[in-house]
Length: 494
Image 1 (cartoon, one colour):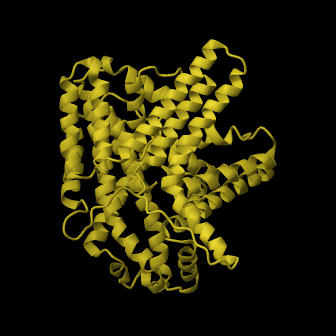
Image 2 (image 1 turned 180 degrees about the vertical axis):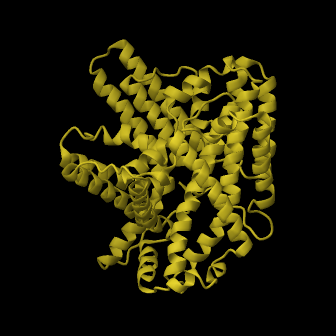
Image 3 (image 1 turned 90 degrees about the horizontal axis):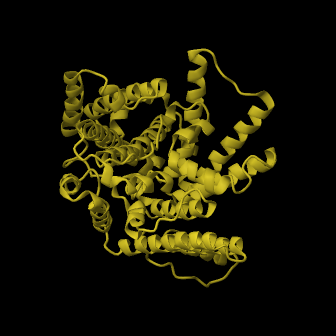
């Protein structure tokens, strides 16, 4: 069930209506049932995989707490064994459904390289939506119980809701038990009819729909046309295509997180912010503090720090950074192009660390200096996006080679841009929408305030006028209908 679908527009108010009426102590059970219905609407079999992950990590939490309470001999070793078993089962499921085909394909390539005619069969498995997200969320619970950051949850159904909470289930943000599970326990104390909270949540959702339907799904037409026909285009189209994809994936992924945050807020749950103006970052390290924040923090807490973090010297720190970014690339997709994308970001980060160590932190005092740093960071991240978007490493290098060898600067002013997938009208709509996005992000960057924070400090009529204007823009200019293909959120495939 897509957020930008008619079925969700029926599902969401229906769930809230019952949530409004159900006795307070049963609210979490209703949300659990709604969450499994939401997830299983794609494929009912997916629910059993999520249930397996839920049962495994729930039992691991109970086992870890029991070992700690009983003070049994060799408790530390036994607790580590419980954690290891939980990780092996969950990552094993993830490997089978997401990486097994990739692994077998590489084995077959290696066999062929060494002259063998043997070939292993590649299983035809459908990747369950959101499996990487809920697996990491469940595993963080196991790790947190082990480290004593949270107590094991005794109520299985509350814990099951923590793993499956539908607003953030299939594309994040990846929540921690210390935040989300705590709020689930307090759902019965939430005041259902709280106009300010509900209005703010709906406003945030509306902005997410604007980012998705007016910007991401419109610019997708341009991006798909350029990347799918890269060998026929010259530098102008290819550069614009790369920039467009950077904007598309931001608006697409951030829109999902924004809708999720707003949706959860309507139910009285505060999810963490997953994006904070990433394209206004002044360095690649800063970019990763602003992009997919929940995943960046997950890798920091559960991989980078256990590897030694920055506690074992500069060389070890840089190796840890590079390894984490390679794993991050693999998390995003079972393909060498994703690994290379992660590796590029690792090299960027290592390069910044070395430069900072030698020359110190460069802190421009002028607007122009800050703009240069932001622009340079955008160029680096946008170049890496080419490997992320391309179907293979070979396609990415073909794209880049043509971008630098088939120069046609005259195409910027000869009107050929309207032949790249969007006509003049669509480009004007896109330009206006991007200008609004930039204004909203700039306010967030300079003042640290979300769109609802700004709007709800205005007068009631001004606030209503802006909300109605955004709603009209979605209805009138949203990318749907005969000329557009409704797009699933990009991160569903991860």
